[in-house]
Length: 167
Image (cartoon, rainbow, N blue to C red):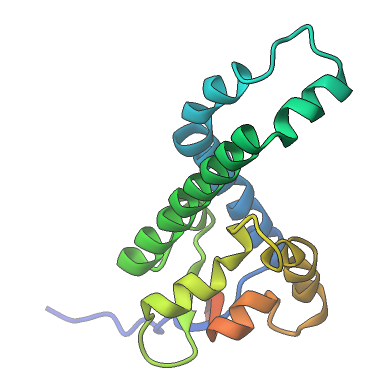
């Protein structure tokens, strides 16, 4: 039997398209909203009575008891969010959003290390100075050739996709 001598498909790995990265992020945020934030929603809704004015609610929430509770709950939620990204990216180099957009995380070194994945997800820690990353981190994507966020540069990681060239 004669074999066909078809041209091989050439592939290369390059920076993921910006729109794919943004879409993957929004998909992941929707999933996180369902599995992490939704269970806490009823807890937060019962803290402040509905008939309170804004100033009354602010006084209540700034009291020591409530502020320490809110800080603890926020910290727990941020740990769960970081674990979502850490476990999926560590195991498969992708989150669910990245899988759907066919992009994945690679290390600038050979293999992804846990510290790299934690560094790239520091943006989810809701305390100063990490909250500054909420603005700085995505801005970096628009000013680097590889569309890397600041936390990805610090963590020595990149989000890439596979491109194919047909001859």
